[in-house]
Structure formats: C-alpha cells, structure tokens
Amino acid sequence: MDAISIVEDEVRELVRRRGLDPRHDLDATRALIEDAVADYDERVLSGGLPDLGERDGAISRLVDTVSGFGPLQPYLDDDQIEEIWVNEPGKVFISRSGISELTPTVLTAEMVDELVERMLATSGRRIDVSSPFVDAMLPGGSRLHVVLPGITRRHMSVNIRKFVCRAHTLGDLVATGTVTDEAARFLTGAVRSGLNVVVSGATQAGKTTMLGTLAAAIPARERVISCEEVFELDLSVRDWVAMQCRQPSLEGTGAVPLRTLVTEALRMRPTRVIVGEVRQAETLDLLIALNSGLPGMTSVHANSARTAITKLCTLPLLAGDNVSSRFVVPTVAACVDVVVHMRLDKSGRRRVAEIAAVPGQVEGDAVATETLFVERSGALVKTGGFTAAAERFTAADQEAE
Image (tube, rainbow, N blue to C red; front, top):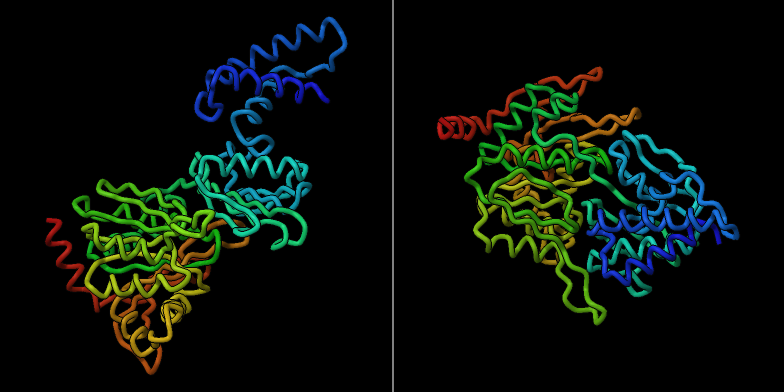
C-alpha cells in the first residue's frame, strides 16, 4: 500500500469517528488531513513507512479524494473545462473551450465504480441492472450521466457536464461575439413582447446558456415556471420555480416524467413557462400550453431553424395515435414565433448561426418560416423584418414606458 492510501484510510477513520461530512465540512476535513499528514511525516522519520512525497501536493490529493471526487476533482475545479467523460478507466477525456482532450489520468474499474457511487449519493438517484442509465446533478451543479456495462460494451460510461456559464444576459453574449448587438436587441424585444422562442442546435452548441440569457430579458413582474429532466437552467428571475423529473422507485413507482411537470406547471399560476429541452411526447403538452396564450421557451436538438420546426411538428405524434399532423402542424405555426439556431464551430466557439421567424402560415404540410438573421462569411447579418409581430413589439414598448 502506498503512502497516500495509508493516510487516506487513517483520515476516513478519523472522519467517521468525529462525525464529519467531508462534502460540507470542508474546512474541518482539510484541517484533519493536514494534521494526519504531519503525524505521518513524523512516523516516516522513525522508518518502516513509505515516504509521502511533497507535502502540499499530498494534502491536495487527499482533500480531492476525501472531500471531492478524487482524480476528477481538479478537472471539476478548473473553470476552463466544460465537460469530463470516462470511456473506460484508462481513457478520461475533457472538453476545454469546445475542444476535446485525452487526459493523462488513469483510473481503475474499482475507482470508477466508487466515484459514481459517491456522485449519486447526494442526488437521490440510483443506477442498477434494472435502470442502467441515470441522469443526476452533482453538488456543484454539474450534470452527471452514467451508463452501465451491458448497455456499453465493457466499461461504465460517465459524462459530467459542468455548465461553465460565463454569460447571464444577452449583453454578455454580445461581448463574447456569440450574437450581434442588433440581433440581441431583437431577441430582447421578442422576449419582452411575450413571443414564444425555440432555441435549436447540436449538443454543446450553447442552447442552455442561450435559454438562460433570454430568460434574463423577461420582465421582473412575471412568474416563471421551468421544467427539466435534470436541473440545468440557472435563471436570474425574481419569481421563479424550478422543477425536475424523478426516476421510479425500486418498486417501479413514483416516476415523474416531463409531461407531468409541464401539466403541473400550468396549475402554478405561471405567466411564462420554460421547458429545458423537448425530446418526446412532452412537446405536445408544451404546444397545448403555448396555444392557450401562455408565453414560453424551450430548446430542441436540430441542424437548423427549419429542421427545428419540422421536429416540433413530429415529436408530438409520439404522444399517441389520436394525435395527427393535421392538428400539430397548424398548432406549431400558431404557437412558435422565433427560432434561434446555435452552432459550435471547429475552433470550439459557440455562436448564433440563424434567427428565423414563424409568421403563422402553413404551406402545404409545412410551417412557413422567414429568415431574419443569418450567418454570412462568419458574421450574423440581418435579412428581413418580422412584420407579423410588429404590433406586439409596439405594445411591449408602450407598456415599458
């Protein structure tokens, strides 16, 4: 057994005896570790024990192991790292500024199992053979996704998305070059006017960040209810209730799906509803809510603003055989007002690639769209005006005065 493992065992025994919670009693745990390291160094002088090495480095490793998530903790503490994933114990990757890197960290299968168990301990969620997938939120707000072997080929797959959000308003996105000032002013007006906004894009394109910055433009007097699979949104809204889904119990009961959250949100006196992301039949419930005149926002995985609208016309069909495109297509045309499409380029930069309007017409079996801003030669340029919403923009301006 190496020196770090010896001291770790001693520290864990002291933590147990003193009734400390290493995740919350950080100062007390660190002080205990420093004392344990000092004591061990004194015992090394008498011989018979392996050398601990550089003292400060040993203390940091022990703090990460006992109070944090071991070898992964330095990556969680690094604000430049956006995502961490473990394909197998010997392959730990990170994403820094949108670019993936293979790290020198090498784990064992036992270490991965222990880390996942500790990560899930505070979440109230579980993973086992009957439920081989899990989504959970870590204490620091990062999102954890785990898949067990049997679904994966050999090893447990672990993803930790950190949501290193450096933008809280559309003005912040203008400063980073994600969106132009003109487009940001349009989107601010759209939100204040109560238009329904859909944010589309690929994974890690910045959809959640865009939703958060759009929500910052919601008038202060409004009451916002958000519904998510797992808490991701961090809104700067005064009157806000956040809800997330719940997994079934060991008996298979008590599950709370996203559809239920959307339905329940309507009973909570909202003036605006935000659904973090629609993937399945909950799209129908959101459309019904928006069709009642309640403003809202959501995000969806799509390759363009146009395909986002097509997907919104398709997903509600998953709700049942009694739901037809004859109902869904005109409902989407009537409910959705603006689509903001995000893109992650090869350099890792996130930007708005397109903003499209939905004027409300149906052409054949497709919802008509109108491009308002589009990326040309690396710049977002305005291509037209959204005349269908002119009256709502004017009314919102007058109300603000």
